[in-house]
Length: 429
Image: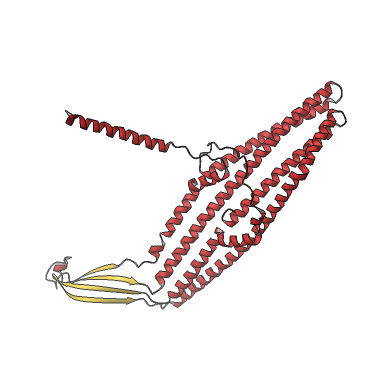
């Protein structure tokens, strides 16, 4: 009886195990993505999921695979020759080696001039390095776009908060104006003016919400996510680096060592140099060697050796190719010099702009904004006591709103400058 029960139990165990395994697979497939709660989480997601970046990485991997074939020998060739296929007219033509006069099997191998294979491998390696650097450049461009959109979204979020605070303040001012109007202490125009300001704030909130939605769509597109995927609004921006890390001389050295665009040009220069050397070596001949056993009837009775060399007599085309390689090398070097000057100039400009935005934000936060807040509080108290007209009160409110807007603008401008600097560096500061 036990011998009959055991196979059934085993079958049920297998079925339960398969169900558990399938549940595990389904659970893995339904595992939610990590929350994208800050800028760094967005960058980590984009690095692993962006399709354009993935395509460039695959192209870089494919380019690396070209190095080995470029430095390898060509495949050997086998030639079969059947001679006297009619046996001096004694038989019908035959293609069987044992039934012809003789059969020769020639095995040949092409041998390039020494050094050519190494140069071809070095050219392929330089080209692969250029593709790899372009992939890194694509990542830096993508990261910069994400940082830019995230910073702009943060600015829109702060502007939205400011607009809502202004709307609440104008609602309060409307109540004060209505109270004073009811007692005959203020004209009806004050109430209407407060209502107009609230309408303007509501219209501005609609535009800001639309801007936020568009930026969310843009970020999801850059991440390679569904356009309607949820994405929390940014609460804060990363802290700006200390001023000591923004020394222009140090940053210039880091740009020269890390900038992916310069890496691309370095790889192009190396490829052009090796191509020039290879063109010079094309003036030397290549060889072909071979060995050929000769079969007569059913036995091999002769062996032949073969040596072949090409004669590089056409010098005019080779001189033209040498001039072309010289021109390509000079162009690559000039292109790098121009790019380096452009990158270093842009770096200096962005560093100066970052320092300026930092100073403006500090001045607004420590001086202008506190003064504007005191001015608004004083104007509000004076209006309530009938010592100030409504137009002056609105002017005080607009001053503090303008100061806060400029504070947000300076903060965002500083981070946008930082994004540009890190893109030039090819890494974060």
